[in-house]
Image (cartoon, rainbow, N blue to C red; front, side):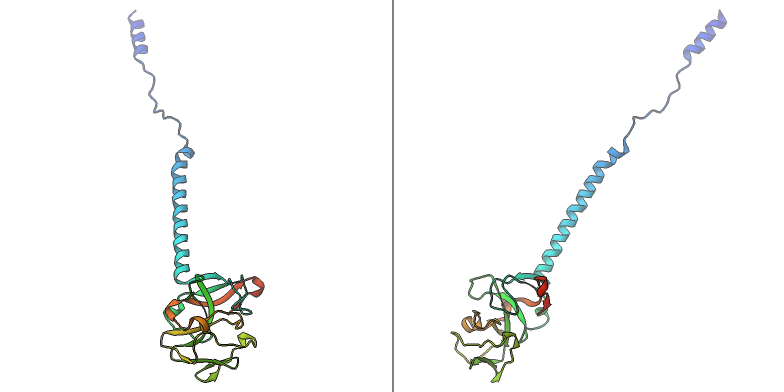
Length: 205
């Protein structure tokens, strides 16, 4: 009896071994939320940086323009696209022959594109179908032989320092400085240097 009792107590006090049992965990599910949020955050950051970069480039470096009129035909046609350098005149001044984009002095449209024909200190005159700078006939192959007639502005005119005289290459169909006069260089946004569309007309200006 004693033996049976001891054996019974021994069996009774014997406990089931304790195991450190953890709930099953799906690592993939645990990682999904943080990974998605991290990916979303990186995507938003990339979009913001791209926007800031594009805005900065457009504002201070390069900007595309669509040509709405035929005042620069045949150099640039209606609907063609050009790229303008917007920082060049931070380090230099407009030169005779530059094709520039500028604020429309008449306010009819936001911007115009014309060619610099004279700059500050020069005297411009138009007669006999040609442009004269300081009494010398200006060589203008870009007009393709079209005659230049005067407009409403009284000529000859000596430009003040910091002024430019702007005219379209299509002299028979261009509302330009002959009507709105010499303009301050501050209205110029940049120098158009590349016609990039259409592709078959891709060329430096």
